[in-house]
Length: 161
Image (cartoon, rainbow, N blue to C red; front, top):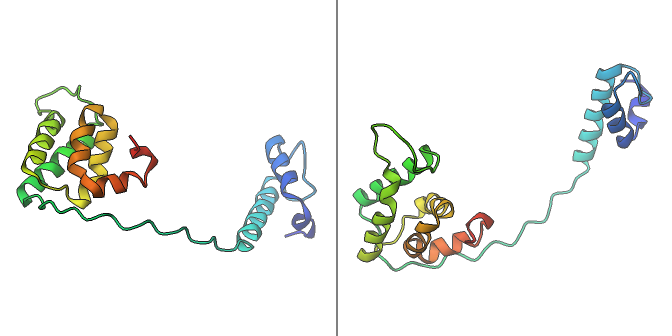
């Protein structure tokens, strides 16, 4: 690599890349390949000089939910309903011979809440995504998600409904 490539400032390399090496050679031989070499060298130098960031404070643990867990069959049904929601793109206007299972989610959540079950931790993200997409699900989904779901929602700006 020529010695001049290492002394070209980053801003000049960016300008050369925007204007083209035939209009502005950036003080380095090699045309476009030389420009890419110089940009790669600058990038490696900048990254090598970075210090690790200080870790962020850990969030407090999720509060305990005293409600009983869902029975395995109910957990499987909820997982299927939420998977069908994501597979259909969240739109209820799907046509064809297969039923739209997403229309069953409000009824399923209301029944689970009446029975006093807690949401499975592994399904909370999908449940909160479903509630984000459909405002009619929010009251039932948040009640079912319980304290752990509310804690998790506080960690993701997309779930701060």
